Image (cartoon, rainbow, N blue to C red):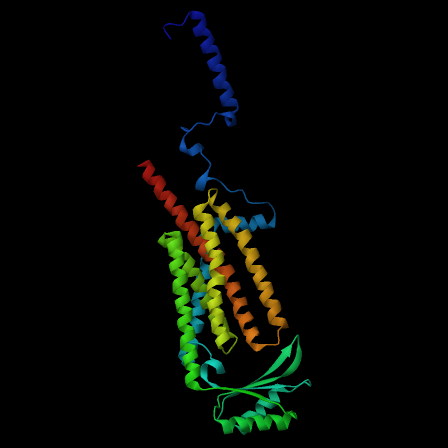
Length: 353
């Protein structure tokens, strides 16, 4: 400043003051610098997400502000599911009702175009064979009855032939399809199927932990998948569905169905830049379409197929997908957001100190 003339110093003071006044009047036009204060930076997790207007925006606002309280919904649902399973075990001695293919017995299938009174046939068979556990259900397609299926714990050939002869006489049919599975073979099927489900779940957990390499978010993904399976299991008990080998295989499918949206969510939150809540909503907009499309497909298949095996598969998948919506977006998303926000608060506190 000492080498400047008086006129130069006067011009510098004049134009310097005007520049400061312009910056105060238009703060948004400040020049950005890599040395700008941290509070002026708006990228990453500190950025603010602006929800849309309207009813959906109000729902998102509630979800945004009360996400910790919303964790109570999946927590209570999981506890109720465990309660249903526990009550069924204490009262029956079984964790789930097993069908003929898992417990052993005989299945007799009769195809008949005329409508059959299922309740009357059940009453007749139970009266004539009181020592056998007999169940009768209709075989139908799109609401039209195509025949009946009789399930019994009887495995003795003579006893099964007597039941078959009774059905042929009462229903005036000639052909009765009989399938018999021994109790030992059924129990072996059940154990092997359970081992397969547990092994698949364990491998899924290993892959998730290996991919994300962070224990807490990975455990949230595994917890959500586990919760989906427990809820579907409880609904099978509530609806008194007798699980078949195909039904157990459906739980294997649920391991994959339930984990895909959780991986999508966790990947978006941990590996992308942008507002934290915005990344969750972005993942939701993709994941909910996937889940609803799968629910529509399983629902239509359940209503249209005449196969009892396919009906059971679609029913279990449907309830697993319902659980996936709840446990992904009210459990995993909320826990993941809580974890990320806590982590950034600790980092900010460490920076300040």
